[in-house]
Length: 218
Image (tube, rainbow, N blue to C red; front, side, top):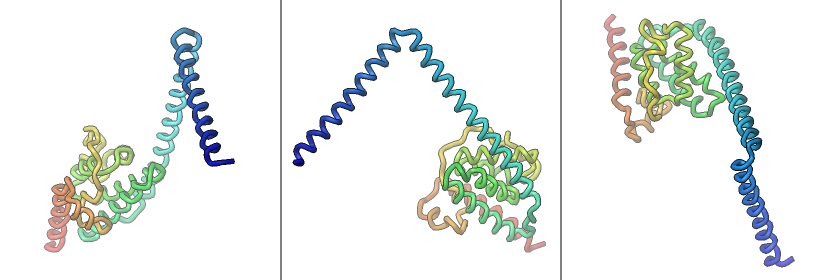
């Protein structure tokens, strides 16, 4: 078989497929416009698909809540870093791990949220950190973090922390490295990229330096 014959066969096959699709589209449009029973069946299918999607979403929310409750029990049993220096190192480690997990897709969103929550527990200004998280953490992970905070009665980082503290809708994403430019996993990229949230990172670092100085003076 010559190359020309093969090309002609391929073109004929493609033309047949396109003709079939166009014919089905014309048929579908005609039935939709002129057949009430056809329209009724379409509405039923749409409702069925919507119900199935809602069921799947509900099941996913229930699984996530169950996983968050189990993770919370583990977190509450963990030893907390004591000194300001230990707290800062722990904070940076947990934020870096949360960012890494969040970048790997929805299957690890719950685990990522638990690491961001661990960092929140030791941060000197938890409400401020939640506001930073809202800017830099993927919205699904941030929603899980708020749910995890709500499960503790808003006591993640001390009085006044609650899901209601971050009611505004999530803004565009940035990098979690913006929380603290000294993060070991992302310090170079943050410095080179000129993050738009650099002021927040500077604020976070200054807060840790202030806490560290107070600890040394004590």
